[in-house]
Length: 160
Image (cartoon, rainbow, N blue to C red; front, side, top):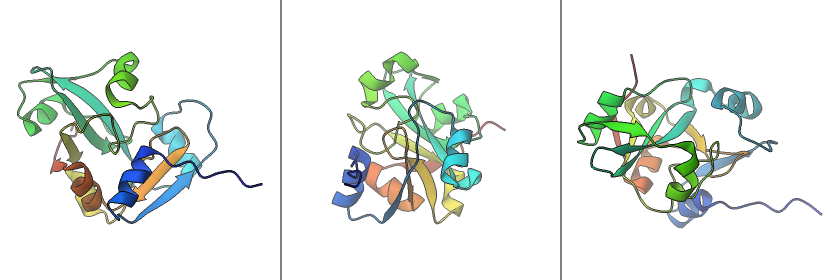
């Protein structure tokens, strides 16, 4: 008997919106960093993005999607959402806020729809790789499709 395909909220949202995507599953029992994820999936590093959740001075939560090997520029991120400042939420709060665990946090299918910014670098690609909503799952899709579904904007938010 084959392993049943696990559908995450992220996958359900893409299917509901008729968005083309590719699902990449890999063996992984616990959190591994993004660079190790790339080794397991074979996805190009520059097209693989991580999802960061931050809180602004206003207490509003925001989602930032940036290349896996890069760091976010907090000032640029804050500017992109009209905040004075933003800071990372604590890992211990991630599941309560998003419904996801560290290493399996996808910009798709969080408990609530938070304002989302995708780093402008994604616009040059026809395909980007993001978390599929659980550890061991990666989704490849068009950045414009992702932006449409999560109502994201594109902005330069990387540390130089």
